[in-house]
Length: 613
Ligand code: SF4
Image 1: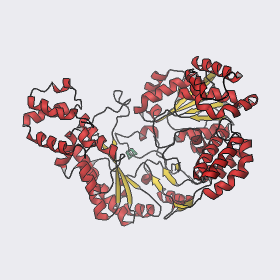
Image 2: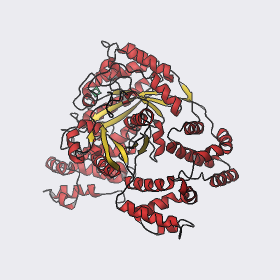
Image 3: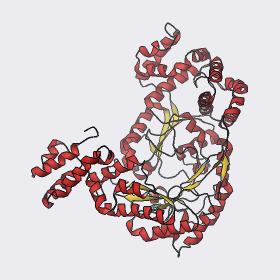
Image 4: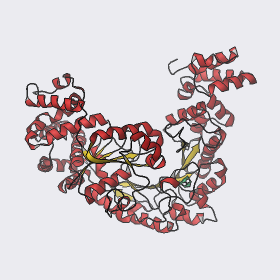
């Protein structure tokens, strides 16, 4: 019998769609024939929306849905808050039976009597999203049917299961590790969930847009041969798996969900694979060889086809409504008006009143317009080993030249190489030179900081990339990654950890610069030197500089020059006293008054300056 399944991702901002929930969706929908629903967002609003949708889903309420569906935001607000002015915004509602039903739905909402699901799966990501994750799991209990089960899996659940269990209670089952064994969820079921193609349709069900949604995702290996102290891979994927054949899975994804522009491979250490050459050949077969291009799929056609196949109607009705809206924006004004009126006549202005049948009837009007106004040109597509490559496996002894030559057969962009420690400079630099020699021009690297490194080593690693860009005429983007201990009870729930050579002010200074560069540092020397300083001395000044002067450089230029003069004029004992206070990155009057020297007290007042001063 079909079960009602709810897949939830906590409402943090993340770049990549939740692959494990997408595979679970495929498992429940295709293998078990269950009714699957995905949500990420405000859970209270979701509960109100479910109540309204369930009310409308009865065929007897069809007329009501057609009349009032366009006002579903007001209706949902009323169900949540019970304020009558939300209903005033809905024409012809007052005095109808529906008004009374809405009052009942509001009471039902207030009682916490939400629609129920037999299975609820919640994904967890980084441990520093602890509060959002725990709150989501605990809230999910309100959606659980009697006799049902909530499962939690993913990274945080695998890393600290005991601590999580303590915060969510014993009724919730924690799944540790991958879903790579038969019977992982349903005993006696032979399907290995991890091998299923992810169900991209669930991404159409929510309003949140994952930045990397137009990509294929996969793994050609699992795990890693190393056990770096700062890394969670040895816990998450303890066995190194040398080869995963991605060809059939990627083909199935494209058949079901259309062509995707890029291929993001989440391998932790692909260069360690004995099947590396085979993996590159597979990627070429999948359409990502040198100079690879693709033609975008027709999203409208795809959505209609999936609706005809009854594959996730909820998602594709929403998708069609969104596509109509996009089309309307492209149409000349008069045509847009006519198109809108035609949609209104067919109750196709919103997903509440829209039906598949009406969408199919409307196809004769919509399809020619989509064909005329949505062009599907040829575009380049790229493959990205997103977790980075291990430069230690690109040395001469490890046949680095052979491996880079193989990688150069792909449309790889960027080539990411990990640059975790300053002492790896030589190996890292050799790997970049090798890549440049084989014509790979777009590169990137992860720069771990706040671990055992010093701020100076952090600066020198970034500067090395600037130097290499100029010398080799390549583009190297650096992505600084702040270290967080993943298991230490004191720190895993937050982002407060400070490495032995770092303090709160230094971390804020780096983050202030990175905020303006969207977290990455590009190739321009002049930009880099403005952002981080021309040399170590200037970088050191930047670390101690008041935050407002770092963020609002231009505005506070003169003030910053005065601050610098005063900073350098402090006597040694004053510098020591001032740094002790500044390192805490708290600048209230109480904090300032701790300084013994009047000179230091005056100097610290620079740190109370805000954007508007
Ligand atoms: S090489 Fe990379 S993936 Fe492997 S353990 Fe070290 S940091 Fe993790």
